[in-house]
Length: 332
Ligand SMILES: Nc1ncnc2c1ncn2[C@@H]1O[C@H](COP(=O)(O)OP(=O)(O)O)[C@@H](O)[C@H]1O
Ligand SMILES: [Mg+2]
Ligand SMILES: [Zn+2]
View 1 (cartoon, protein in one colour):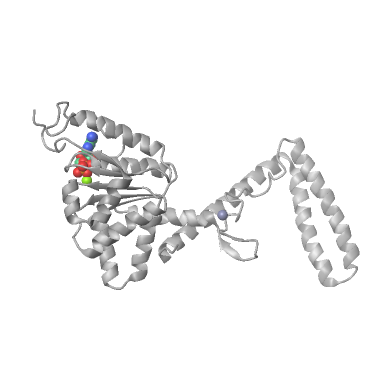
View 2: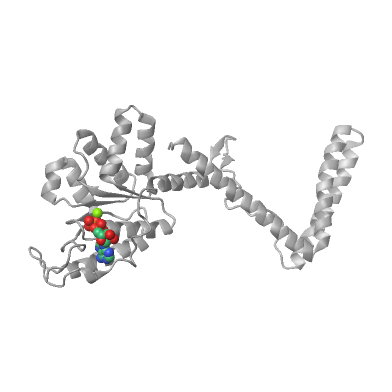
């Protein structure tokens, strides 16, 4: 996986802050314990001293063995005393130690594997994914659209022409589905196709899902099809293949991708093969996608390849939004 330099630097800074806060917490905790149990401060001081003395003894070479044996003995005695003081006062053995978030790499982002090779830790990879998502989400109005601000009031109770149910009934079910979808989200959740006319709440509900799923700690990216495809197209045709690859990687690897307004992008063979590849790669890697479109099935078949349409229809839960644009005055 490769992200932009920017993303790596931001992720590294974030990890640094985590590590610093670990040491700050440790220092604070130490002071608290020392003020209760001052003997511990002396013990720790002496232990540090022993460390330097042992080093010096080796350098001087004189009676090195005898000196270091004496120091080792003293050190063991001090450790024992320290542990029993901690234990007798209700603390764990590691109460004075730093408490790292990641036991594997001690919040450095790297560790030595069994072959002695330094490798990138999963925790740093996770931070990078998160940063990449945030970077791509900077342009979207994520915070405004939530389930709480979604109301069923806007939908008519009468049976909708051409359908056997009312917009209210349909939207009640769709809202229910979306809520359940987000609270039970996993990487093996199905993809979703939200279909229907403009102004029925597709964008609103998909952003509400994004909000919930982000809060659960997943990496979510929301993009509108015309925006992301024109960005990719620009990168591609100006030969910025690295940037193009980075963008596609983030889109392919995030836990949940939301592609809004499919069908309003400029129609070109680059665009339709790119959108197919992103959707298909995610499908193969067990990564759900939410697609929103104003297009009918017929229109989709006219614009995209049979391959893409059948892939989408065969792998998505289909939510058909019905009703009249909620921003227009209600016809009654
Ligand atoms: N059921 C709803 N309750 C409250 N606001 C809504 C509802 N449905 C849509 N909206 C708002 O109406 C506007 C248009 O909805 P939007 O989600 O963009 O529709 P679509 O994506 O289907 O075209 C947005 O500002 C949205 O927040
Ligand atoms: Mg929309
Ligand atoms: Zn780690």
